[in-house]
Length: 255
Image 1: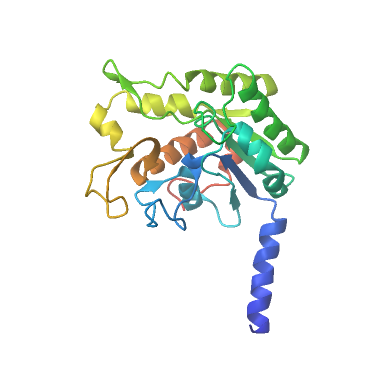
Image 2: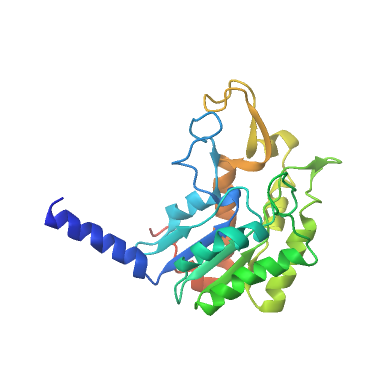
């Protein structure tokens, strides 16, 4: 490696390590960037996508995104396993986007991840958020994304409603910034038909995608279309309600 290339690499590494304009994302699989990962068939995850990938598209130059989203984790299992390592990415003056819930309500045969919306769910969110505050971060809590449920002619996820309410309550009590992603996405789907809504989620028939040869019926994860929509909803909420954070992103038309 030439001296010039080595200096460039060291400069880039130093920039990421000591940057102050930092956004840290801690969430579950709904925010993962899948582009360098393989699915169960050892093929690209496409068209599955997480909204964290789309966050990169709108960042201003010089802003660093540390996407620590991880599939399969709840607020509890994330805090007890990945968080001790990932909290090293916190920097004074940075922002934490914190969103869990999808797996907090879903038991797993091998993983201790279920939390209760009245008690342990907000407790684990607070454990993460308080550590971020100690590091000088500003905290934005996002209520969990609703997974697909359709009954009585409308979209409504009754399972995650208590978790969304708990996230909102915690943010109000602790004076954290809050984006009610659960409600915003639910509202977005109210005027759509069942089939139209399903097109935003990973419902694929056999033959729809070479990456999913047997098809897939996944009410939790989003397609590229869905992930892009989710990020735009988040970005609009940031621009509307959190102007200090909005400065980290490109303006709608000028850039």
